[in-house]
Length: 282
Ligand SMILES: Nc1ncnc2c1ncn2[C@@H]1O[C@H](COP(=O)(O)OP(=O)(O)OP(=O)(O)O)[C@@H](O)[C@H]1O
Image (tube, rainbow, N blue to C red):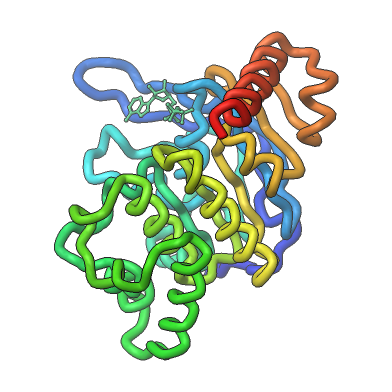
């Protein structure tokens, strides 16, 4: 039976991978990711960059083992060729049980996760939910202490634990969503735009939380983010996607200095401009 190898190195290994969405409404299947290859070493942090629609979220969902989770069939990511291994499990034909075992160790922060927090639960229960779903017995006190530490890092008062998502600002909800993605202590975190929709003052709190988590656990991460503060604080390597393909790959400083692909050059310029805008905003 297939079990994830938590300390596999590389933790993610992707070779010539293609992913598609099923045909629907009379249309053809859509190839969202084409011939992508890369490796994420154990403990590494890689950023996935690229313009809107380039396939970043599709790749992230698939590698996190959440590609087939969508309620509607048309939104499920389909394996369309190549190979992908996460924690040494082949993602080609991952059965339901193997998938459940894998997702216990792979955290996934979906795009705009703050907007999809369970509306009927208060923040405390939202944070406990991933753990309570997996096991009836857990140490509430120890977890409570960890939650308090995380709330402190993201600068949310403990009184927020009693509040419901609709009572929070968009940025507060996103901070809770990021905390929630860490509750099961994932050895690999795949996070889609963790700071999106969070104001410039509070984005560094999320960066701090991820740094704290990384230092505590040594977890590997794939971060989809164009937040220059996050890239500088956390990321060593970047992958750049365009129209489903990988068009740039390497050390974050090197790749932008010596970009030979037109799109990677444009992206480097845009990121530099964002950095200056942020400084001007302060
Ligand atoms: N359910 C779906 N059915 C068909 N095509 C889809 C579906 N979901 C996404 N796509 C298409 O797949 C491509 C990749 O989308 P994806 O969301 O992975 O890109 P992205 O790089 O994450 O973009 P963004 O930064 O805007 O989130 C896009 O062209 C998108 O229109």
